Image (cartoon, rainbow, N blue to C red; front, side, top):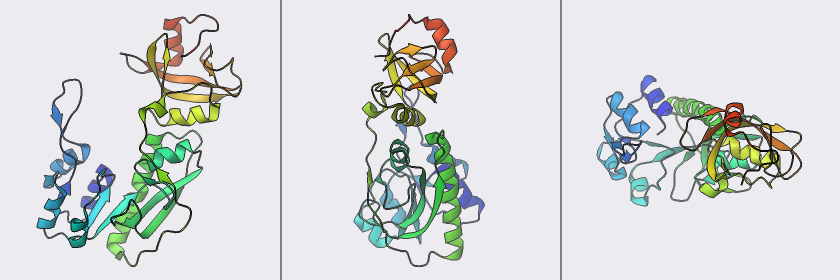
Length: 275
């Protein structure tokens, strides 16, 4: 359950018998165990929390709500406790682990959120309701995710108050959203500028300059570039003759900063390239 959905359910007066979240993990530089944001929010709201899905069978719950849980629910649990899932795509397009990211990378201009019946298959269940959202050409994954969470929360609360009704089988071409490989976030400057810009919009794009990693947090499309990977001012050339104008970057071991400030400190030589 995403944090906004959890808080919204409680604020709307719906009973939450139990919250199931991922186990505590090591986070931050200290490496100490810390709860997930969902667990932290649940504890703040005074709700019981567990990391064992089977515990949900012991609390007399009538319905389970799943949001970005990251683990498959086993058949014996689904047999005893009906569940719905808020999925961030227009099913059956982008079933799987990274639907939002895959939609951006594919250049989709539209996505959405669906409330679906959970079953054993990967996002194969019939759908109760969907809402479509346009994807802005400059919109980051974080910005889009916030809008999808808001829409999904609205759909969920509305369905709980009206009653779920009968779901509709999914229709259309099925595509799968595989989990992102870290290598996909490395900027290959021989690719077209549009594709590179989509990678940057995911929020974790990176390249290397003088053998040090540089994260590219924000960039704009530029009509002209000096060649693949060539830095000209704050514009890095792409493979199609265009480029990316770096806006915000994060050098290795440092915090985010304007690209112009990074360039002034790095003092690149004419024609110097990203690796």
